[in-house]
Structure formats: structure tokens, C-alpha cells
Image 1 (cartoon, rainbow, N blue to C red):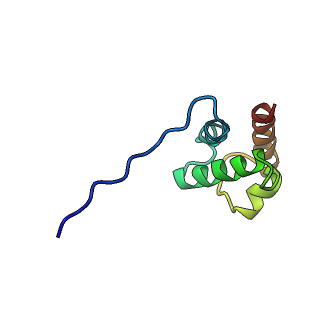
Image 2 (cartoon, rainbow, N blue to C red):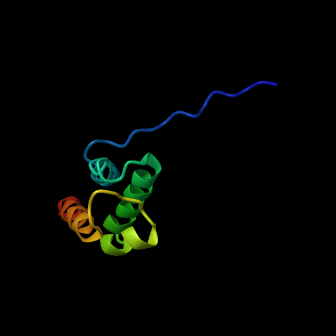
Image 3 (cartoon, one colour):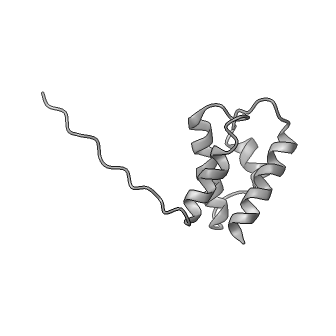
Length: 88
């Protein structure tokens, strides 16, 4: 039995919306310790930034992002400020 090598990963450019959204999620590493949770948040933020997804306050509840050491209201405020910078 043989194993194929993994497919290559294509990185987003530094100026892309995708990269900026995932960077917002990654900057919350202190409050969202699980990488999969941050990836899910980054994906949802990208969808919101492109006009397809929900607002940050809805994302936190619907995606069931697990966070600690911060209130939901404060986390939503940080995310909203970050996404407004991306959208402008």
C-alpha cells in the first residue's frame, strides 16, 4: 500500500481579504485557544466581509465559537473593529 504526498497549500497574499480576516481571528489566540475555532471564525469573517455571511455578533453565537477570559460583548467589539478596517 502506498501513500500519496499531501497536496500543496496555497498561501493567500498579504493584502487579500482572506488573509486579513484570518489574521483577525489569529490575533484572538489569547481568547480563542483552539486553532479550529479560530479557523472557523476566520472563514465566517471572510464570508461577512464579502457580503455573504452574518455580522460578528451573530457569528459568535451561531458558529458556537468557544472563547475564554473575555465577555461575548467585548469579543464582538474587537472583531467588529477589525472587520471594519478590512472592509474599508
